[in-house]
Image 1 (cartoon, one colour):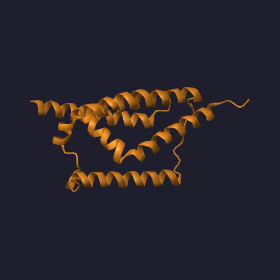
Image 2 (tube, one colour):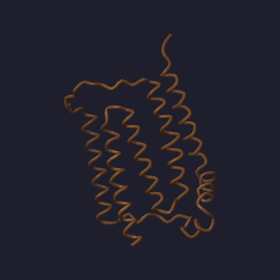
Image 3 (cartoon, rainbow, N blue to C red):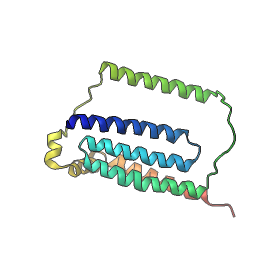
Length: 174
């Protein structure tokens, strides 16, 4: 019975996440897009819970759905982005054609990988037993502050540069 419940929750959450992702990229109002992105982040947190990664789920909600989205909404409001009310004609530019071709190729690769199950993955040094023994937080922290310290620092610098850039762009010329 528990397995059936997990499958139902997984299917509903995955469909909601896909719906929210589509709504993020199709809405004209940036605030609506940001709110749908919050919904997508919450769905991802539920998927982490289904994988028994409670710490990652909590961090997903606190960092992404909380802090990062608050920053994004703040920047949207700071820049006072106006919603455009004009009708668009569909114009095929080379960039749109290339983007559509790349998206179709990636979708075909995804279907190929799922249909043939040729991507078994690579087992890492942290098995589920080892993670259960040492705990989620210690496993994430040991990887984050040893092997992945440099990418972690680069990501923090990129976020800082983005914040500074948003503040500079939002200042009115005097």
